[in-house]
Image 1 (spheres, one colour):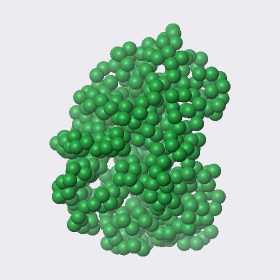
Image 2: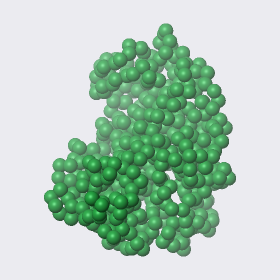
Image 3: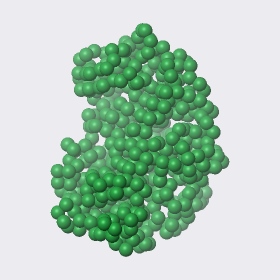
Amino acid sequence: MTMKSNKKIKSGFYFQTTVLALLLSACSLDIEETDSLITKGPSDVFNGVENPAAAIDGMYGTLSGQFGSQEELFAISEVTTDILVVPTRGTDWGDNGVWRTLHAHTWGPTHRDVVNVWNNKNGLVLRATEVIDPLSQATSEQIAHAKFIRAYCMWVIMDCYGQVPFRNPTDGPDVIPTVMSRSEAYQMVVKDLEDAIEGLPASDPTAANKFRAVKAAARFLLARVKLNSIVYNGQYGAEDLQSVIDLVDEIEAEGYALEEDYFSIFVGPDFNNTEVIWAVPADVGSKMWNALHYNQAHSGNAGGGWNGFATLAEFYDTFEGPSETNAIGSGQEERRGYTHTLATTNADNEGFGYGFQLGQMYGWRDGQAVALTTRTGQPLAFTKEMPGLIGNNEVHGMRLLKYSPANGSFTSGTVIFRYADAHLMRAEAMMRLGNNGDALNEVNELRAMRENTPALATLTEQDMLEERGRELYMEYIRRTDMIRFGVFKNAWEFKEAGDGHTDLLPIPSSALLSNPNLVQNPGY
């Protein structure tokens, strides 16, 4: 282990009691003085965060960096589901099986993304707790931001792993973190968010900069947590579901609303539309170029794409529109997007469409539209079907662009919370309370905002899950949704049915070694 400081290091997610434990955890860390995990002061005792404002800036910046990755929480939330797959193409995207095991649900306690989500989110929980501690003398607004960040990260840990380690900053170096159960963590998350609602700045749906939490962001997360209470507490209470409805009503009363022109909602970095509640200034390049072919270059990215991520035929077929084409103007619903044709490719879009990219791809070269080819000179025509997780070539699988290079090759601004999700959460809460008529009206109100999306005649749980998939794909929520609806264990393309143990991720091996209060989740 290489350090740039000899000061005492504390960790909220694991505590290394001996050099042996450090070696067993197989980690190599470079710790900078800027890390808030480094205790300030002349002793081993926590003396407070010297600059809470800078610490808050740092935590938001850390979250932004994590959201900017195609790995970490994005991989756990989307690649594990029926929406995204990262097939191996020859030797490309083999990566020792890290992507295939996510899709097939065969991960283990040393998987890269399983470990990184655990470490990263637990680290932020401690950093936030340090700011909240009275010794830091933070302002009420700074504490509210810290409680929002802590609640978000603790929710991720609770949702993914079911156990949440926790330590107070003033605990001595010999104190091993306690471990909260899901229900205990749920209560703490709820309390943090209730406090955050009181202390965060007032909401402004028309603000261009939505990179900091406001009251609506805390209300949104609290509604999400309450909607998943059946997972965390084992049952729904009518009061929890009514709370979801009330919280969304309050968000709506603040001025947030559904927006038309679906894909324009995601064009940053200025999100001055009434849909976006919270975003981060993260680069969205990894959400674009991970799917696009090497020869799909852009004036701002001559290197082209990375030819990895694809989407599944089963998911494509849940959208309205023709089955075997997604060419622009072919009658598909708005949220499915479109691929450009030779006639519609121009200098402004450079051949890049939105949503599902299926069939022949075109580009803009030397002042004219051209049909693109693979590296071997064959037509670059993405197929709907794939042979499996292995054995794929350059064109197998549709590509999915929620953020498109048509808006710039490496634009910044990733949407995390938006009103359409809140709107559908309210509809689901109504449905689960038995108010199917009101729930159906809510869903159809959203569908009426999306072109070529006719009203539903009835509403079942399957309809609700599919509607959330169509509206919210690639927005960090599909895994959580599928677990709440009880289908995460089901079979889908290239994944066999399971026994349900993968609803929880394994506790990383290094964490078990360093904290004996943790217990490995069943099935691992």
